Length: 252
Image (cartoon, rainbow, N blue to C red; front, side, top):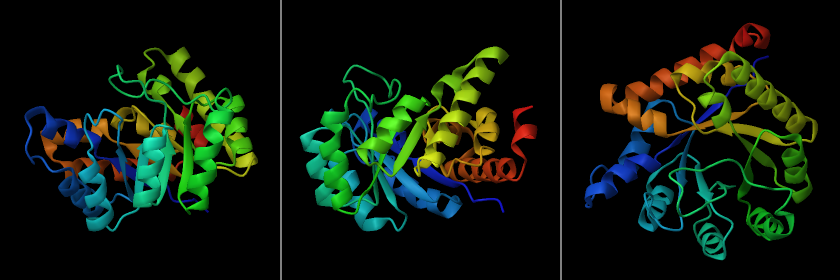
C-alpha cells in the first residue's frame, strides 16, 4: 500500500515580500489559509534570529488562527528554545543559521554538534514538540540524529535540485535514497526540503521512505505568475502522481 506523502508549505517568503516595503501586505497568515485550502498538510515558518522575514507576531497568529500543524524552523539558541516552548508548535525543525546567508546553506552538523544539540532535542521533546534535525543526506548525520533522540530528520536535498548534469544529479539522488533508507532502518521519520520545484519534485516524492516534503521559495515565486492556490494544488498533484509510481521508473 502506498503511504501518503505530506506537503508542508513554507510561507517565509510571503513575509519577505511584506518586509521589503513594510506594513501588513502581503500577509503570510492569509497565505497559510490559502495553502490549507489548496491541499497543504502543514505550515512551515522559519523564525530567524535577525527576523528577516517571519516575525514573532506571525508565529503567534499562526498558532492562534491556523488549524494545520505548525512546523517552526529554528536555530539552536536559547532565545529560539524559549519561543518554541512558549508557543508549543506541533513540530520544531532545528536548522543551521548564519546571519550573512541568503538561505539555509547545507545541513546541520548533528554529529559534531551533539553536545550542544542534545538539550534542545530533550527539552522540546519533553514538551511534546516533534523535533526534527535538518541534515545532509549522509548516514553519519542520520546516525547522529538517532543518537540524539530526535524522532525526525529532514534531508537537505538542495544539491540534487541544483545539479546541472545527469551524473551529479544521479549521485545526489542516490544519497537521498540511501539516507532515507537509513533513517527508516533506525526508526526515524524522514522528510525532505530545500530547492524542490515542479522539475525536481517527482523523483523525490517517489522515494517511499520519505513521509513529508517542505517547500516554500518555489511555491511563492511561481505564485507570482499563476496564484498561490493553483501553484500548491499543482505541486500536490505532482507529488501524488509520483507517489503512485514504482521507484525504479521514477529514477529513469
